[in-house]
Every structure is written in C-alpha cells, then in structure tokens.
Image (tube, rainbow, N blue to C red):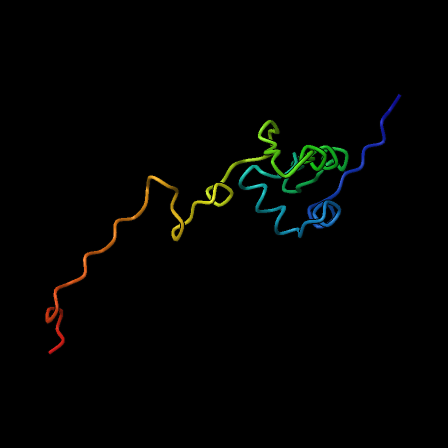
Length: 106
C-alpha cells in the first residue's frame, strides 16, 4: 500500500501552519521548526510532519510547559530574562552617583 505524501515548499508550508514563510526560514536556522528535507537547493516539508509538529505543541493548561516535546526550546525570553529584567540573583549593581560638583558642571 503506497502512502500519498504531500510535500510543500516554505512559501506554502509556513502559511499552512499559520506562520509567515520567513518565520519558517528562521525556525530552520534555530532548529525550532518542523522537520524538512532538502532536494538539491530546494527545501520541502512533508505536510504530515508539519501537522505532527503542530500537534506536539498541544497543551492541557496554561501551567503545562510542554518541556517533554523535542521541538520546544526554552529561550531567555521565555524564562523572563532580558537586559532590563535580569533573573533574581543576577541583578545589576546600581551605579554610584558622582559627588556634587564633579563631572564637568560648574
């Protein structure tokens, strides 16, 4: 029994999954996107694998981290870390204020 496989290029597979094609291209670089194949220089996606990738993101509640899925990576942004909001325990030290009359102003 042969299986009818549906393949699509990035311009079709991205919108099929609800993403812009450029987002799929970025996810290819970071490894966060669905599996893909290369045929020469052509990048193609098996739409059944795209469906499986989408299904791997299913959650039961907002507290479900989904860390058991192989497609989800935890980034600094998802952990709440940023330059303006460092994690507790790694707060930036406050800069000392210069004494009055120092710093070039008369």
